[in-house]
Amino acid sequence: MTLGTALTLTTACTFGPPDPDVAGAPPNLPTPSVSTAPEGGGEREVAVTVLAKGLEVPWGMAFLPDGSALVTERDTARILKVGPESDAAGLRVTEVQRLAEVTAGGDGGLLGIAVSPGYATDQTVFVYYSTAKDNRVAKLKLKGKPEPILTGIPRSREDNGGQLEFGPDGGLYVTTSDGTGGAQSQNPKSLGGKILRITAEGKPAPGNPVKDSPVWSSGHRNVQGIAWDSGKRMYASESGQNKTGELNVIQKGKNYGWPAVEGNGTDAKFTNPLVSWPIAESFCSGVAVLERMVATACLRGQRLWMVDVTGNGTVFGQPRALLAGEFGRLRAVTAAPDGSLWVATSNQEDGGDPAPEDDRIIRLVFSDGGAGRS
Image (cartoon, rainbow, N blue to C red; front, side, top):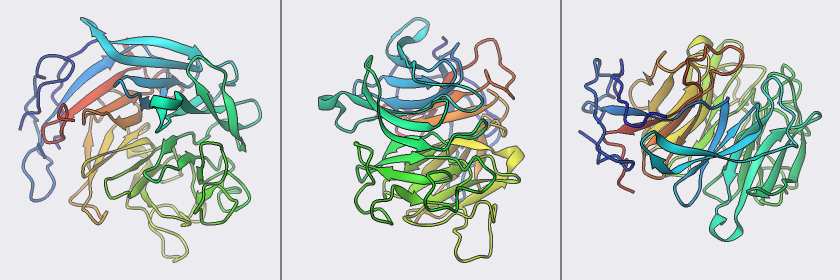
């Protein structure tokens, strides 16, 4: 592991030097070679460090109260703990457990992970994983046996959704994939091609669009990333479409159009994306929000798209690409408690071209992003 490696990025986002790195000495901020700051802003600098290396297809990341991160590996079905301890090599990575219940294959395996909002008292985490027959959500205490709370989510070889996040309303949001070319996303009785909202017991959450249904939104191709801003606005990636990758603002009960439409359409019954990109530049997975920046990590596009948004949730300026081609395929991204972003590569899989240190977890510190101040 290498801690403190600084890279010069070919794009810069708008940011002066950040506070000292919480892992040790102040980061050595590079001078960006190109400024792509949003309109009306100054230059934004970003420092990049590699926190961990030698992982195998890391998929989900969630932080514990002590500042350490739980990281899932899709194919090995391992839950890893990254940090908070460190040494000269970087953050310590330890295996917490391996889930025998997981059947990995294709894009299925051990996927999303979420930490209970009441973890300090209930010690519970939630995982999304594939079996031979379905995808499911389970809860467990670390090193304990998973207890399934939601089963029967459609599984396919290539697309399985898989993200888990607790929203600001306390509901557990679950993202799924259509996985059939469009047969499930428009079927209100299917769990496929949806974003679901459930309780910690796996029941449909109160206030859902349809009583006794877990469905929150529909018409999705393959959602693998969700996050909320300070205004409780929800953002989600749309991965695996034929021509267009999307970043959507998710609203209760809305239909996002798959398979009838990709990108912007004219049918009023479907909700258009906030931003869309050609699939070769996107095919994005994880989503994170840092103040007024929304980040989405892209697999085929091999970059982190940064979208500045206004207080009303509209796009401000042009989306900017970070890390383009620097680390290969990027899948997971999450906002850390200190105000930095953690990004995981996904090169140890079909379609990847792994470097000797892959897969890696990377930390981004933005000079106006508050890292180290929380």
